[in-house]
Each structure stands twice: as structure tokens, then as C-alpha cells.
Image (cartoon, rainbow, N blue to C red; front, side, top):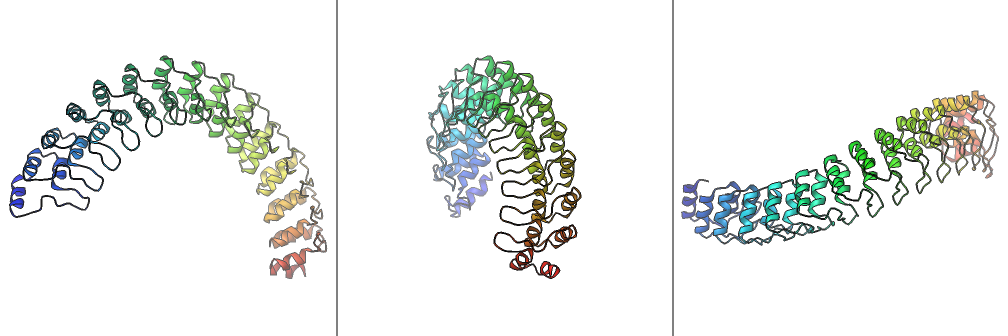
Length: 473
């Protein structure tokens, strides 16, 4: 704002249109800093009022961003154009509204700025103000007849944006102006759904419900506000929606109910609320999975306990015949496995591949679970559809502790799978010499051949495990 210095530089021949690395001229910087007398001096000397920087911003946009009202007045007097848009399609009015500069918004509107002009994303100045929670700007735009229900490129209106961000005063202002409360965006989301989502704005949810919005509206994926709130763990919102008649068992396109979504995402308190509201424990989604299955899969043992206490079927399998116990075992959720076993989960159940929980525990390297399963009577030599026994699953990974446990439980070391492979053959084929020694010490036959005629020795040679070859010889 050193006016005399600027005058001296101009008198010395300094270029008035010179730009910095961002493409900004002296006039833009004067507008940005809010020094109207310098801006006036530059304009008088011929500075281009419509010059643009690398973002497409004009001097007027810089002043609008920071509400430099005196500079805005100077630029407008210098014939700055109200309709010029930057590279995103935003005008000075968009920028002022998005930054809460109500005086500038008023000035631009009174000067003739197009109130409903949209940027390249379809957003209006009203949408920008609503998304930023700038109530004064919203009021000013509404006073100039801004369209309430203009949809942006995602189908969202100003009300969607305000509800999603939790600006309750803006929501009220838009509602008072008769904004459509049940309008949907391109995903089928209503303002109520936006308020029920990740941020969970209970006060806005309550207000919209009192205004009579549809509590059971659905997105294009058939998700209800309750499902959205349950998935995101918004306790107050869930309670409010249930109180206003939300359907607790409404399923989405994947067959998931609010209870399933809450169970999967670990929202224990929400699970309790839904159960108290009468949610069905054993409904299944499109994959045949129950809420208990999903909680077990994710290892939410407290939720598993809650669902079991509510009467959930602990053995109900999914479409692949995987039970909750199997799901927890496969994902190594030890605490959840123990909860399910305490609830009398079936240790002898088999999935479509014929695998038992014991096989899965051996495959995942879980000796503590395997020991518990054996104590409960799990079949130590039971084979899956491929003919693999629990011992073979251990040998595949060279799990010596588990191999010892199974041998102590009298596992048959010489059983063969459907291709004739023995536990010893599987062990040496994968290079696990120490585990092979355990099997040999317990009677494993070194001469057993598979259906390809390969003995354990040949398999070790074929795979290049020299130490195993030397030991077997």
C-alpha cells in the first residue's frame, strides 16, 4: 500500500501489467491486500481491471474473497465485470458467498450480479453460502430471490449441503423459505439422510422430522436414514429415528438391515438400541449372513455377546455354509471365537469345501483355539472335500506347535488326501524339515507315494529342498 513508491515506479517506466509467478498483477495484489487508493491509482494509470491470473481470478475476485469492500467499490467503478468466471466457473459472487462476505454479496447483487449463476459443478452462490454455514449471506441471497432447489452436479441442493455440514440455522432459513425437504440427490439421498450420515447432526434430524419429512425414505441403494445412522454409529440420531417410526428391519439392495450394518461396523450401543426396538436377530443379507456372522467376521466380541444374549442363532451359516465360528477363526479373532464356543457353537460344522473350524484354526496357526476345539470333541482326522486333515493344514505352513498338539491328540500321520499326498509329503514339499522330523518320529511313512508316483523324497528333490533330501536319505 505504498502509494508514493508505486507512483515513482510507474514514473520510472515499470510495467503496470507485469505479473508474478502466479500470474498476478499489481492491481490484483492491491485488491487482495485491500488498499483502495492504490487500486484507484493503478486503474487511473491504465491497469487492466479484467486481467486474470493462472486460476482465472480477476482483481474483483480477490477483493470479494476477503470482503475488501472499499476496493470492491473502486473496481466496480472501474467497470469490473460481474459475470467473469474463473477456471472453475465461479464468479465474484460465488467467491464472496462461499467466504461469508455478506457486504460484498449485497454490493455485487445490487450492482446486478446474476444470483443463480452456476459454476462448472453446477453450484450456485446460495449453495456456496449454505455449505459454509454463512447465514447472513444466505439471507441476503434469498432476499434477492435466489432459487432454493437448484441441484448441483451431484444433484445436491443448498439444503443437502447445510444438513450434511450441520448448519442448523441455515437449514431453518432454507426451510422457512420453502425449500423442498424431501428433494433427492443423484444417490437418492434426502437432506435427512445427509444429516444422519457420518457427522450425525441430531438437532437437524429432529428439526426435519418435526417438519414431517419421510423417515423411511430410501437412497438408490435402498438405504434408509436409520441404516445410514446405524452404520455410522450415530446414537442420538438412531434413537430419534426409531422414536419417529423408522422401520428397524428395512433392508438395502444387499439385504443388509440397520442391525447388520451396526454389527459389522462395531456400533455396540446402536445394536442394543435396535434390539430393544425389536430388530430381528436372524435376518440374512444377500450372502446369507446374519448380524452375528458379520460381528464375528469383524471380531466385535462385545456385539457377539449382545446378539447371543438376544437369542441370535449362533450356528446359522452363510451361503457358503461358513458359520460365525468359522468366520471368526479364519480372521484370527480369538476373543470372538471363545465367546462363540461359550455359546455352544457347533465345532463339527463344515463349509462347502468340507472344512471344519479345527481345520481353519490349523490353517491360520491358532494353537489355543485348536486345543479348545479338540477338548470339545472336534474330529482330529476329519477330512475336507479335498481330503485334507487338520494335520495337513498345519504341515502346509510348517506349524510345529500345532503339529505336536495334533499328534498328542492321536492324529493319523499317514492319511492321504484325494491326490495321495500325506502330511509328510506336504511338509517336505514346502521345505519344513523340523516339522517333518516330528512326523517321522511319530511313525510317518517315508515311502508313501501320491497319485503322481512321487514319494516325500522325490517331492523334496523336485522343489529343491536340499536339507530335507539329505535328512530323508
